[in-house]
Length: 251
Image 1 (tube, one colour):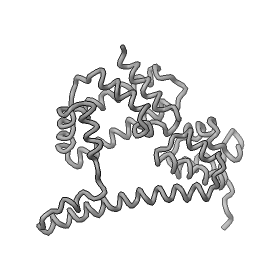
Image 2: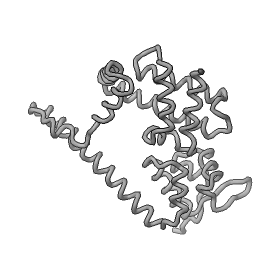
Image 3: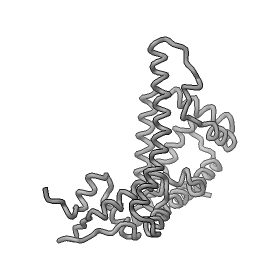
Image 4: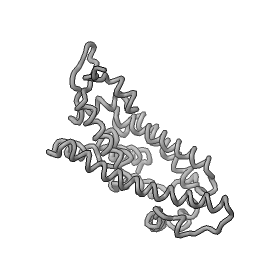
């Protein structure tokens, strides 16, 4: 069978789930240019482009900002060397998830057979202590306990629905970040309002403390763990979210 030398932007969108806006943005910032442009401006990508896009998405999913991805791809690291490095990181993540999966399987087996649970086995691969301590330090024991209690009471179905809401919020930020509108635009402020409603649910309070939300907004940009959620379409995405939320909050 003859090898397909190029794929259209629609075909790339279909297999990756990316939008045309995202692919065009990658071109604008010099991250991924099409190999050719057909009639009507239809973009096409060759095999080298697909390999480069795979690397971009791998780095992005590993939490690397797009600005750094560009430096990594253009810094002289060979394709095989870069993919090998990504493979090693993914292997480490896979090992962590596999350990958690084995822990969950052992709990299921113990419950099914009426055996005594073994805590040391149940929590292999899990370590949320540092995050719980951080939450308590930033927002206090009452807020941490209230949020933890709510999370437990949600149940499996409720947690799945919450994750869907979180993904919807992230997608909404991606869309407005990729647009030409600024943080104070109507579109950005609508997403900011959506974000605050999300926090009201997560924090189990209708009265959001101004300073707490402002601090969280700044942390989105300052803390790489948070920033990675908002830099999928632009390296300045986290700063955009911060500015939009602070604008919405007002002085």
